[in-house]
Amino acid sequence: MSELKTQFEEAVQLVQTAEGDFKPSNDLKLEMYSLFKQATEGDVKGKRPGMLNMVGRAKYDAWAKLKGTSKEDAMKKYIAKIESLKSQLT
Image 1 (cartoon, rainbow, N blue to C red):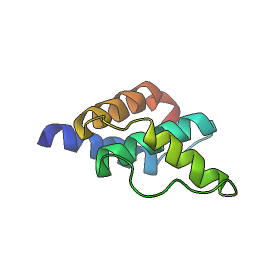
Image 2: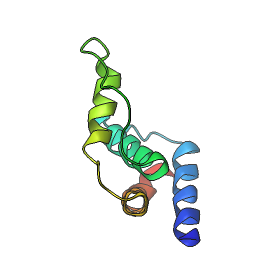
Image 3: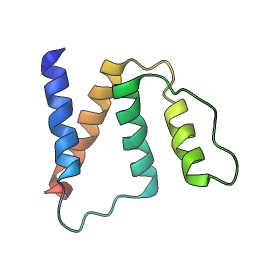
Image 4: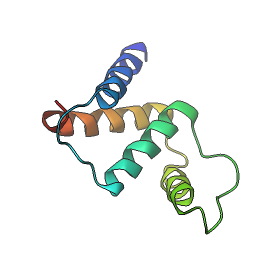
């Protein structure tokens, strides 16, 4: 798994240092957030944020959809998504 973890960390680094005019949609941001959280922390924990916290609630819901997905599978999906977006990130 160490090779997978290295690839995952490289993909995360690419996202964090992305430059240019790339403007991801909110749906893409939520997808990447949820995959990152699932890969690093596992299944969602805690209470679902209230109705007035729309951003927190959207993040929680996106992450909760991945419940039961292994950390390794989440890493693979995150890497695959970044690979498909790579030309836009650099």
